[in-house]
Length: 329
Length: 245
Image (cartoon, rainbow over all chains, first blue to last red; front, side, top):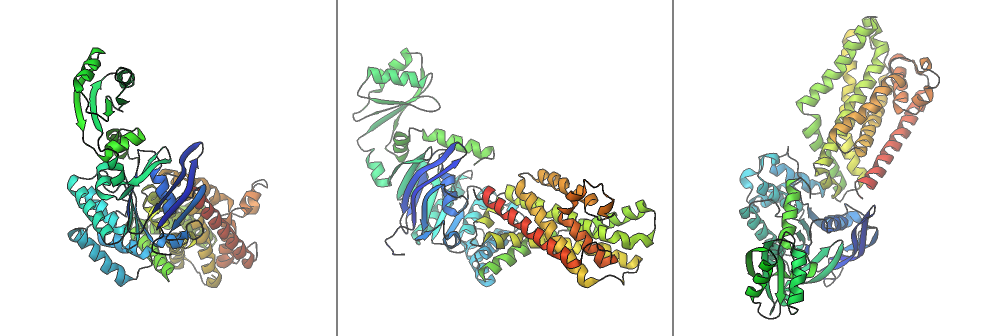
């Protein structure tokens, strides 16, 4: 494989579960050394895509090449090149942190001396050296997440798949994990990251693909995506009432404004010119809506995401967190 | 070499995590002892009947020991998603599942020797043909373990694994000739006996312990090997279809 060729190459992959189309004609390429973000709401097809890329699911159509290796023909060779961190910390609760890492190393054929020294190195790097002998089952969520990431890179793979690495953990641990991800990428690891934290993707990734209902709706660099927001003015109104109907009324009354209902209540108003809030609040209140907030949105990836996908990022996060609490993914 | 490192470490991890845990060791010892006491008391024939009971006791100890542990541990790991870690490893599914099942096979084989050790103190076992008994024990352990694997792949919950195991195990106590000959079964039940691998295992045990086999031992061994291969093959196919969707 030549250096300029993509390390991950996906062409037209599709997956159905009965009548449900989970992934449809998904295609993208990830270059060597890139940190690629894969964003979408719950049920958009992110985990199904990762499962197909890592060999946990077989695509119904399309091809996947990892470092030039056709995954349908040589899945084991491809698996040797990748580390996988699933969306749940799924190490063995009865084993210590050190034993877990050593066991994961053995699955990749690492010899005892090599896996033990690598395990010690990673425990130090991830700030878990003091907990090395404690059972994984007794770790905090943040510690579990860090050890699961360490297990994913025990064999120093050139490619790392990270599925929701910071979901459900405390702020300090999430911050530390983001730093570790950036550090791994800086040292040359190609990273495929799925997340529902848009600001996390904005901070870490060079390029991003948005996936909605199994289809990629946009793939671009963060820079180019953000450029679309320049010169745009966005104000979001929070109120109780029928958002969709009021959104239509505003569009009819103020044709120069682009108006969109927001999941969870409220509307988002967008324009190339500065937006006058007063007339809009008056109209909303005349129609019986109690406006609790009018917020000017700064240009952000979240805004781009909402414009492209039509999905409110906060609602996406809420939905995901609910699923986590309920034990779903 | 890489596959062997993975194989060995999966096996030793399972031995430490499951099979060598005190509850399982005590289960492995206690269970066959309870079977012995129960059958001796029930038969009312005394210690002299032990040689005729031993093949059945050995067979039951293996069957219950292997299927219980394997079906539960695999279902448990699947539910906790730690099994995904194994499926993501760059080793073939055959090596992976052999590594997962070898611990249960060894556990079942060790269980088999509990009635034999107890029996050696109570009765004369000098007529036992150890050269055929040991392969018979291993082949029964292999078949029972692969039956446990088949069960584990067919269920989602741990309690389902237990229930589904009993669906197979309890009829096998009566249908496989462990304690009374298949010839004593109603004629319409006998075809069922002949499609159960334990029937040939029990026959091999009767042949090795009491020199009372219905079939030639090479035929029993060949059939047990064939049944084991089919059960393993079907389980692997089901894993590919259900777990690597």
